[in-house]
Image (cartoon, rainbow, N blue to C red; front, side, top):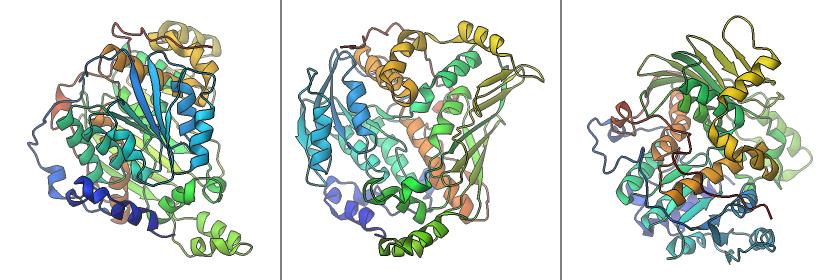
Length: 469
């Protein structure tokens, strides 16, 4: 398969969008042009705290109906003020099945399928407000940019970008068009993460010193499953890149807690990967019985474990790990450590301490009762019933729609999408150079010094109801 999918993206008409010549569709590489670090970049519009005009109805087009898209269709159909206008997937059966989910609702979306560029027709429509993207990683930036260029807000699954050029393209397009570009980092909306964020805001942990996050998830079997990711695109990522390829689940929540982009900023990082002890041997084993895997058996895969450490401008540290092959229990770690206490989510049960011993179960329940944020109190119980990773997916979607309907700023902005996604190519550069330190770009153009921290209160909104029928 090689780079066929990426090559196709480049030659399938995107050059005609005015994107290829800007470096937007450059091949994955670790080269960082000087403009990424050029001081004095002028913001066209500070998208941190930016509020678009409110809209009573949010008309949505959803692109990608494989792994993540069908769940989004279901969740969005249960939120007041949403009208699902269009569904798109290259596979007709996926589009038909997604529409079938809506047969008992008021939604009657048009379907787009069959061609690799059918998604553009959704972005070209005049009756779409939000393009919701659930496709393989290489398509996220092209689709976000094209949507914003055509007057739509964009929300994309993680990561929002895979190269630094793409990160800058997102930032510059969002600022110029004044359209939201939100990365759908659902883990920011999990219950313990929001609880501890509210505790941080109330000063419970004192001044934060250090944080840890991770994506440790055994996907070895799924990555090598022919019926798993479409055309095995995720395996291709692991066979062509070596770094922290999927950082945002662990990184997003701790960046919120540490006010990254909003009071503090990443300065530089160092990344190190282990060797690959499992993927190449597994490919070779599979190839002995199935010639299909011969091409995969000859590849050199990224290391099992990548550990990336970050130093911030205020002297704090962040550690992010990535391992999707080792036989380990699932973990995002989510550790935040301050001058007065510490919280850690994994391994379960989640724990909080203000001394040398963890709080008891009863003490933890008391903290939950005191510090659970109003966002959770508003939709938490309903989110658990509707689902999506225990409810955090629904909280994320509800919050996005409620903010758009009430004309208030989103919790995640384009600078978060760019910075959190940039950890992958930056870590690749460090790994490729014997773990040398790599400077982290400031996507906010210095606005991080005055940007307000993420505000997870309802901010006078919270008016969007949940459809329970």
